[in-house]
Length: 242
Image (cartoon, rainbow, N blue to C red; front, side, top):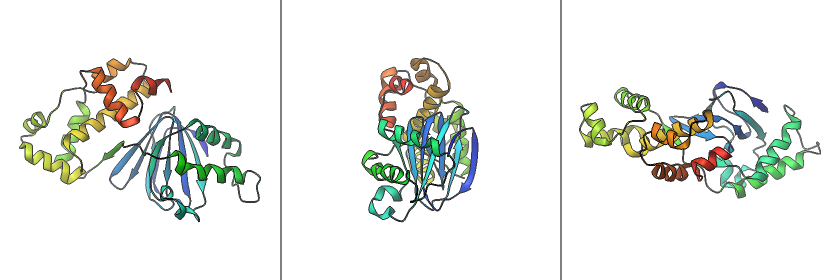
């Protein structure tokens, strides 16, 4: 399936493994209480049977999806876990080539079947390191108030001390609140939401990189660039060029 749209696909699962390439824009996959961010020129694999919500968050997003048989998924751990990966030129070209069969069921009597088999087989080799852009969620009301505040004031300088004072909570209690509800530290959560906002701004606006850095709370462009590279394995300027 090759489509350009902005939509929300509610909780569902497939009896096949799903390979999807985000050609432009950004996509969000929610599994249980975790939301995975998939920026442009990245692809994701969702194992057969995994319940998930898929949101295409930007009208310019082009999503190309292929659904594969699962009878041989045990031959590599890659096929049994959710992962998000930067797409190599080879994978991009192979996925784009399948657009000619949009909406078609290609079975093993079709001459194109072996092409798709080859695509599935190279994925583990081309997908060594999954992207760490994962945003946890919680139903804890106190925690949700803090998250809402951070997201609405993303450009301000935040510390554990400043947020503790803002919500009249001890620093140690606040730190435990993050670990207990989100399973990550306050600083890691703050860094993650800043990077997600930066990715969205790079994709959706033409603002200079330094303005984006300041808008998401960084006073140093070098610090912003280093953090961004740690998440996406590319500098912000290189990511925009792609």
